[in-house]
Image (cartoon, rainbow, N blue to C red):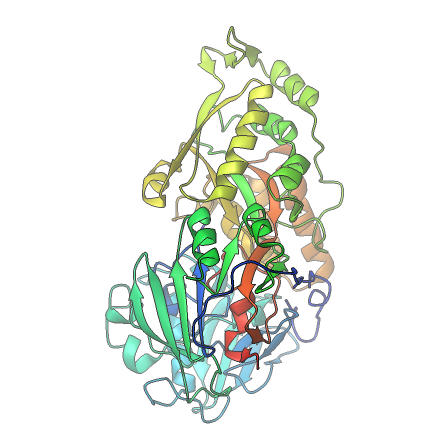
Amino acid sequence: MAARTIRRATAAILTGAVALTAAACSTPGGGAAGAAGPKDSAVVGIAYEPETLSPLLGYGKDGNSKIFDGLLAFDADMKLKPALAAALPTISADGLTYTYRLREGVRFSDGRPFTAKDVVFTYTTILDPKTNNPSRTELDALRSVRAVGDDTVVFTLKYPYAPFAERTVLAIAPEHIAGRQDVNTGPFTTRPVGTGPYVLTGWSRGEKLTFTANEHYWGGAPAVKRFTMAVVKDDDVRATRLRAGDLDAAILPPALAAGFKGDKARRTYTATTYDYRTVTLPSHNRVAGDPAIRRALDLAVDRQAMVDRILDGAGKPAYGPVPTDSPWFAKGTERRHDLAGARKILDKAGWKPGPDGVRVKNGVRAAFPLWYLSGDKLRQDHALAYASDAKKAGIALTTQAGTWEVIEPRMRTDAVLAGGGSPGDPDFDQYLLLKSSVAGDGFNNMASYASPVVDRALEDGRRTDDPAERRAAYDTIQRELVKNPGYTFLTHVDHVYVVADRWDGLSTQVEPHEHGLGSGPWWNVEDWKPKK
């Protein structure tokens, strides 16, 4: 699903609590040497590439874009720190006004100065309905943004939105370039200019993105002078290219990463995440949209077996978008593997076993397609395991692989093995995942899930900064998903990376679903130093 920790400075309740420790563990090595490129260059293998490089269309909204900076940024512990802002914001007592003083002397990579006008331009353009930004609702709380001189920006909110400061890691675009062309189709979408540590030098779609260090970066010139993101969608091919020395680093499924155990030239890094795998159960499918089918599948699936066999232990069972070790997780919403219970639900609802074992109700077979992304081994393995568990309950799923171009037009009626997840505030992921009003908007609410109770709780959760009221709202959502699960959540997946042991300064953060591009051990590549 295409779809990433602080509270307000005066009421920080989440920062330390949700900082799930991102483990960077060393794997003793041996075998072939790492990629033999220059010490001041790095080539990393990623699974996906962005659709656009424009912050105005959604790129860099969660930070770590490399080309751009936000007003704030996340550090290794997922705490906010100043970036283009000189300090954390000053927040009014009523929680409705955020004032940012900007860092002095910052310039875009074309030499033009960065000012408050660029901030105002970025936020107002994103809020413009004519801008094709699928994440616009993330800024729903924002009433206005204005510049006070060149060095101060004031945001005014419609209501106290507790995690607003986290939204200001959003990358800032230059008005003098992006403001003079079509925001949706102009050249800035593929040839961006920013204030970040790297400058884009080339983008061959489906192949690679290349960057050079911004020698005039306000945070200091990076030691890694050339940085390449190689787009390798197939997991097996990525592992092969890493082993051959064609890549310095890559994200890999746990089973493939295990093949590098004993390789002394490489290290393995494991990052804890909010990244889940889920099956969409579209409301417009007369089988998948049946509440009894949904509840039965929720019990029939063996989540722990998926963690053990597919993830090799690198993850945990998922019962919703919130990980079980997050302080926002609603205790008691765990669902045990209960095949007998699943069959009982179907029996009671009138889904009776047919001659071939597949259940039937009113002449309709309990069967529907389940799509997964071609080349994604984790999604394939999850899809096959889910279909196997469903079959034991009498539900027949036909698993099919395809590209997003093939899958997206079918999402309204066909199930999809999807992914999502964003660290930090529960509003970040749940609103776009579950809100009925965003169904059908790209990859938002892929299941077309609709629940008045959930809709109301989603609004309650984002329209108050009272910790108790927010917790009650998100508890309500998670408990409602037990009663009527529009998705079957399967696992939360740890991200595993194998990296040539040629640099110092590598670490991981708690990661979102979108990994490999802004996340991974190269989230701070600008701070890497070649080993001597």
